[in-house]
Image 1 (spheres, rainbow, N blue to C red):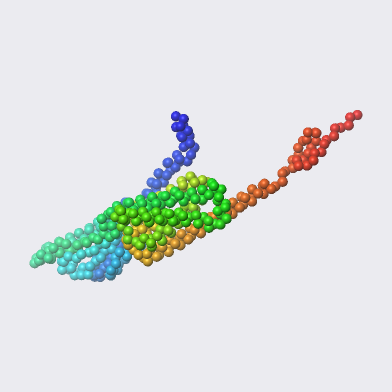
Image 2 (cartoon, helix red, strand yellow):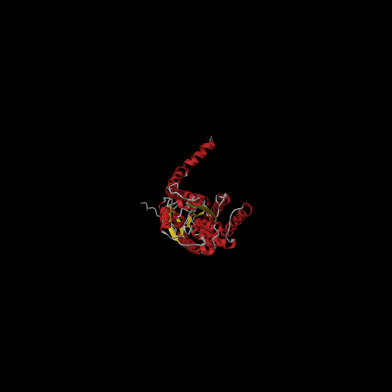
Length: 416
């Protein structure tokens, strides 16, 4: 019972009761705001209109009228539909074949192509369903009047019943292999977690060991201390992705050497954020406790488990402050979709600029801390070097003396 009372007293006087109650409420509120809907509405799609006729434009209007799709771009031809998935702006490419209107008027079948980004199955389910509904509706509108006519041959009858044939092509993960989704996500998450656990207490460890002031003599020393974390975390993540591909059958189409570039920027940027977040921690335990401010938001907003299309625009913009979100974007686009590094140069430049800003913030924080410690040292030195105050004190001889001065005896009055 004594152990129970002791632990109860410790918990009651700590912040744990508040944290245990408040954090689940914050999680509920946060996820409610992040996921206002359980389905993806108005997903951006690209339509390749090779027919460019009145009927094809009418068909595009029906696609755009669906609550699940938004026709964001219309092109007349493309020989590489995969390129529209590289920057994660579109979830599907719909190809309308040449001769669509002519086949419609002649009651012949036309094959409409539906190309889907299958790296996240959750984001394309509604698109597949919507296109099937549109094709069924078109077939009914065509077949009912046609079947009332006479003199139709077998080919025309089949075309009337199946005027629009939807051909679905799932790219990048056609078999919905968990190696490319769930297992890949948690592999990256554990690597991210280990990086946070070890890099968050960097400054607090120096402070506890009384070495922070010496390190801040050169503010770049903090950045230099980040390099070992960058080396080992990059090597660990690349090695784990390689093991997942070789032994797990996972998909990884990027050049491993080139993929190291965004991974290095991600790791170094993450350590910079960790240093800034945990700088004021008094000891490493407090610093590690701040991991919840980085790990959960970054993992959720990265789209590793939940499709980013589910999030409102503000949440996506907030996610761009976490380098892990950028790394996972590179992993999806280069690793799973097979995009070359040249296609990702805009994102790579943005990430490089952001990491540079984080590095400058770390240097600025180090300079501010250096100035603060210098003032504290100067204040302590001035207190030690000040003279002792002079205060009256009585002497054994009945006289008065000033502390630090010779005593002055008091003479007794002369008697009679």
